[in-house]
Image 1 (cartoon, helix red, strand yellow):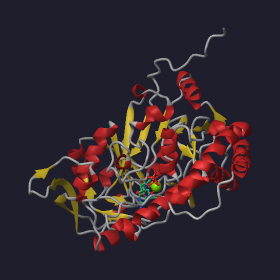
Image 2 (cartoon, rainbow, N blue to C red):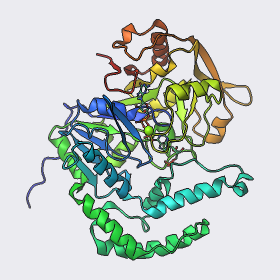
Image 3 (tube, rainbow, N blue to C red):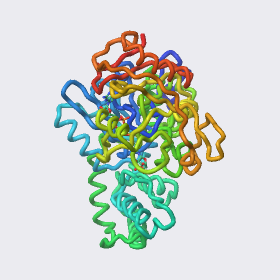
Image 4 (cartoon, protein in one colour):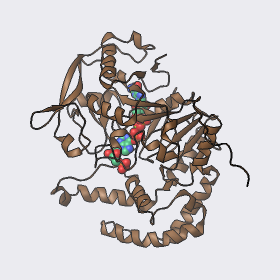
Length: 449
Ligand code: GDP
Ligand code: IMO
Ligand code: MG
């Protein structure tokens, strides 16, 4: 038998890094991944799906990426959608076509795991129907249990992955016969389930779905690979990896504010299972955080400012969802939450984003502890949504700065009060800030040298 290729030796001379969100998403991961791609060879999405919306701004061009890694603008780099992602083939193909139409190369530089799970149309119907049902008046009598999902079918697709017998994987799209065999059973079950959820829809047609999804499989075929072996071969070749987290640590299914979370491990803990690369290879974890806090969808948010302050942050930060265009809820920076996420993710450095949005406030508040309903104080985060909802934020107040900072080039030249704000973050979280971002463009970035 021929020997296996040299696979993932103790390759410690190249640095491998994960970029993750430390809040409730939209921290600016897309901008940072694009920026850091220059220093890495392989950019890997390991979790989530088209619920993510990662923005990259280069000059007057703005790209919103949902499934394709934000490293795609560098044609010589390899972009990988690994096994932990749930892939909506129609969204992926539209994304490929849109990028190509804008002159971005998408060919051999994009690989998709044959074991990634597929988001099917009925997953999106289930997602929307369940949300509708939960937020309906009847359900409200027992409290609103809806999550405010992106309705991209993420939860139902991951649920099928766990159910196993009703799941479709990317490899299934490559055989019409195999796909049809699975869909015949799945469609009858799903039709009944959709009816029970109150969806008025004709019975799902396994033949039509097989034709449509086998066709999509053929379009994606040039990109489909066993990405686990591929990534280990890349490691063996000494290529450096950049893992791009989607969603964020406080939305992590195990460590986030359950049940108001997404359905994957979006903290750095998801990298090994979502890629097949053992955790010991990831030497650096860059935690991205906004200089304030935002959240889309339902769930507790102790520092939320549902008032003129929140409106001002939303307006200045253009805080509207990249995927759903929903207005994001905005509030002061919650350092208790960020420190918790930094702990879970093994964060070695911070990227503090959107600092420019805070220019012009007379004073700024930082949450450094919570008061429980019984009056006692804690500096620990509670990922239990009901407990967290009862917490009252306790703030430190720092003076603001009035100067615009979006043209700053060096952290040491920022206004003294902006530097003081950053110093306090570093001190509280006990992780160094490696990057400060003062605008959406690549160039509006202050990197510690
Ligand atoms: P992601 O999901 O973490 O990649 O973040 P999103 O792309 O959903 O949201 C971040 C938004 O902030 C995008 O519109 C970015 O272009 C923008 N952005 C990123 N960094 C900065 C910054 O430092 N300042 C400002 N004003 N906008 C930024
Ligand atoms: P990026 O990668 C912000 C939120 C949704 C909802 C909850 C569950 O752009 O930071 P889902 O559709 O995943 O079942 O929704 O999670 N959510 C995000 N919020 N940014 C994201 O991704 C998000 N991905 C999911 O708003 O509250
Ligand atoms: Mg986003």
